[in-house]
Image (cartoon, rainbow, N blue to C red; front, side):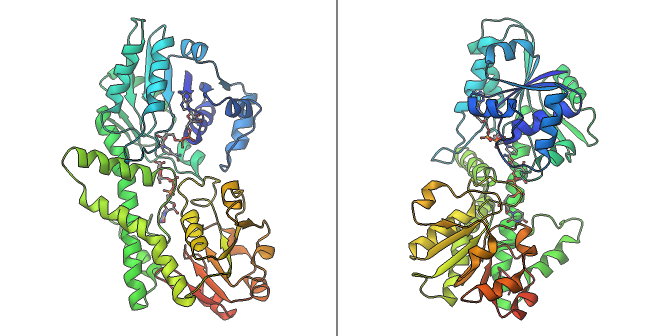
Length: 430
Ligand SMILES: NC(=O)C1=CN([C@@H]2O[C@H](COP(=O)(O)OP(=O)(O)OC[C@H]3O[C@@H](n4cnc5c(N)ncnc54)[C@H](O)[C@@H]3O)[C@@H](O)[C@H]2O)C=CC1
Ligand SMILES: O=C(O)[C@H]1O[C@H](OP(=O)(O)OP(=O)(O)OC[C@H]2O[C@@H](n3ccc(=O)[nH]c3=O)[C@H](O)[C@@H]2O)[C@H](O)[C@@H](O)[C@@H]1O
């Protein structure tokens, strides 16, 4: 089938590659010409495991192409996915500017029957608005359907998730649209759910909100574990083996970051408040997450009442491993607090380049982990990159000045690290 995807970000690019891989003929459209230029040359402009290889492959099979020309792209394709961003406004509400622009663009250039699929995460009721925005912008009388089809992939394993999702949720009022989407996804071996657009929108927000809740829940339990000298990992393992609970998303640490959980939790809270139906549990989830970096810094400052002029090496800048995405990364909340305490901050990340804004504030990046840790007074781990488990901590113990490790992701074996002479502190783990 011929498919157009509007918005070549993390989701749109991954989807495009995955759909091309299942035999569809996919065009990717973006307003950002630099992204289109890069993708057309076969260069993935962000880091995502395995995606580069498959992008190159499907440029060669010619099942994947990219364009900046909305008129031709919309005319040529009957099925159009929208994967543009829905960032937070200052009040927490999602900014629908890009969604509306995409809808109006479809309306403007639409010349025949279309199925428009909203893949972006959009607030309750938005899919109906998309329909209206297309109608208002079009002179063309041929029919069109709108479907809400939320995306559940995770960064760092986006392609794997796109090729093997746990479920496909489709929200529409049209059987024909349901059938077309099921045909597009016919190679996927997972349950399909047919529902209304607004229920599909809610399913996406409720899923992210629930996962965020698991994280804040275990982080609070970890704080109590700290009080009693309990290893929270042991507790999470014991809980997770119960099928009704499940072991995923019970990794205590610095809290959740990224481009989605923080923004989607805010949006759902905003919507609930404005309907007079506040979500009390979710409010606390957000509060616990907000306080988690401060809780961690307080642990550090118990050992170091003054951080002024201390050489602190911070490991990990991305919001999670296997991605170069730093949107809402907790690492930067930690760096900010360390700078407020007048510390001397050195950072390391296997793939992220420190943005200039932070270089200008005096933060220094060193690309070799051994060179970075040389002369350190203390080390802070912010991202659970496997590299930080694999590096030679015995060698590092000979390079540092002070033997202190604060592990914000609980990734090191405390006993082994302590044997090397380090004082080790995790979260709910020491
Ligand atoms: N990043 C993720 O892991 C996931 C994101 N989502 C949701 O998917 C949506 C997209 O997220 P990302 O891919 O991370 O965003 P992104 O910011 O990486 O990409 C969005 C792209 O849309 C483009 N764009 C904006 N307006 C446009 C227009 N009128 N026409 C053509 N292109 C336009 C931008 O230039 C950008 O390249 C969001 O709603 C997000 O919440 C859902 C699941 C996973
Ligand atoms: O809507 C979205 O954009 C996506 O948001 C999350 O995916 P993502 O943000 O890529 O990454 P996660 O693996 O969920 O991690 C999010 C944050 O939670 C943290 N986390 C995760 C799991 C855990 O046990 N503990 C924990 O602190 C991570 O370090 C990271 O900062 C969801 O997992 C996806 O299903 C969803 O599609």
